[in-house]
Image 1 (cartoon, rainbow, N blue to C red):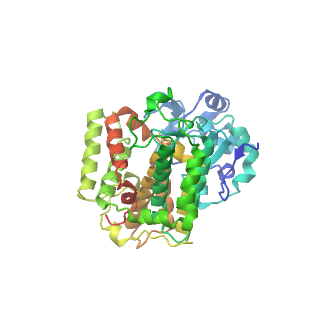
Image 2: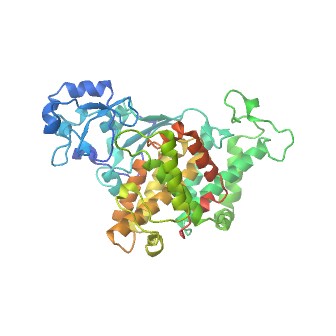
Image 3: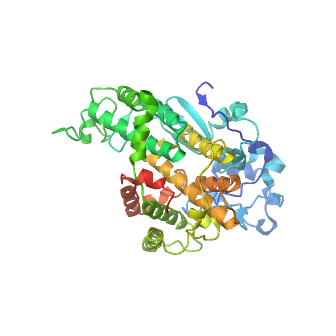
Length: 451
């Protein structure tokens, strides 16, 4: 089990508590899980109104895979006291594999398996329960049968044009951790500095590989095989050499002063943040429908209308998971300045550190895009936390508001959620998103507080 990497400082206790999960709309059930449930007297465990029905239905979102039936908004096996009926009557191993997997996330890499955790879990949010390190034996076994396993054994894409070796990515991740945990700089500046650092590394890499934009007749990606991207050996210098050059100049020299000087010079736009977050929240809200699934034209129209109302600051802010809209003035009267060392600051820092550990940057097209999406997640967390505080009538974002905001973003917006299916179905929406992300002002705009 030496190739099993577990996070430090994170606790998880749900194996012991047996609570029924109330937060997921769909729990997929593969054949082995179905067979386990059919072995027991499952009808006695179902809600009385559903005992004559199958415990399985077709997924409302895809219409293909089997998922657990829901009744009155919760799993059909949830008891009145909130516990899982299957877990309580027959033990944890009898539950569907998806339920056993949560809140773990498995990432297979050339350096072994990294076991991450979902911050949608209450125990993880509160850092409660036994340490993850105490569950190594169980995790080693469950890793072999888990449903959701991300495989990152191929080449790592730094940008849409350039691949790097796994060793280079590990060094880059170390540097991003170092920048994120830097002292004396606000969180917003540390995240922008991460963006700058990746851009500088990509620039060094292009130059060392002979892919400079200033070079005449430079090689094109199609010259380098079927991948259509510059592989790790496509230039005169290794990926590690380019990264060490970036590290020496922008981290080791003057304690990173030059890196943060560049980051502070970048100017953002509250309007761009409003427009972008409006677009993303519209993407997510278009997935929540009852009855007949809307077509592409209706979905696109709804999204663009929502996008324009935020871009022009019309009306109130409507974030469906919060239930009620709130006014834009909330962003002015409710600060999101988390004091260093406060419970709120510690929680957000822990979430961002763990996102790196569990390899969130590799779950999209490139590391470059993955880090920019982290900026989006922080902006979304801020919006939802301020909205929650406004609806509760609180003058500041407290730990309860922040926990709920992180849970919402983890459930509805991260790259492992079903929001990504929209971009497959409607490519034009992905093109709009890509155009906004590539704007030089994107990074500072996501960190802008004046909307």
